[in-house]
Image (cartoon, rainbow, N blue to C red; front, top):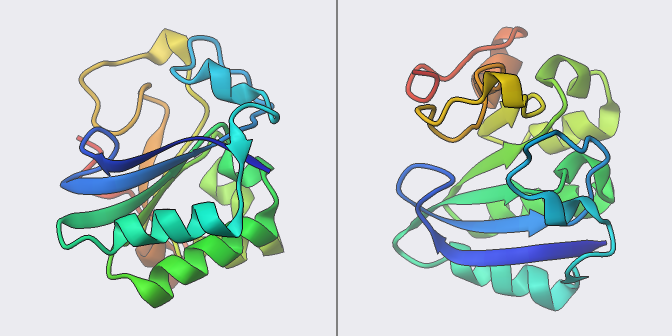
Length: 168
């Protein structure tokens, strides 16, 4: 499993300051994707324990409030490794976890491994980027079909709950 890039201090992908990791590999190949280079599963560098430790260390900085997990496509990676990462983030830091996926939330919750990951995720931006619905005025997503979901509230209420703060 590879990662394309880590941004220790990122203000583009979530509110406040976050640390961001982009995993390599995506089978969706959305037309107009902002990160086409990360479609290739072999792109970037190997994701190792040392890389994970470094990413966790960035999340411990007093100014960092979010862990941003993007791709590529996080849910097309080794899901056991992604699960280990989100568990560590919640155990070792005080940040919220933001994750982006081309999958729909309603499909992910039907998969046991994906569901285990979602138990640790605070905000999920779901849906494939659609160039015909591109909207540069949207926050934290590229096209109007994508949704910013409050995962924990959705799991509690057993229905998809959009985040009022970020879907405007």
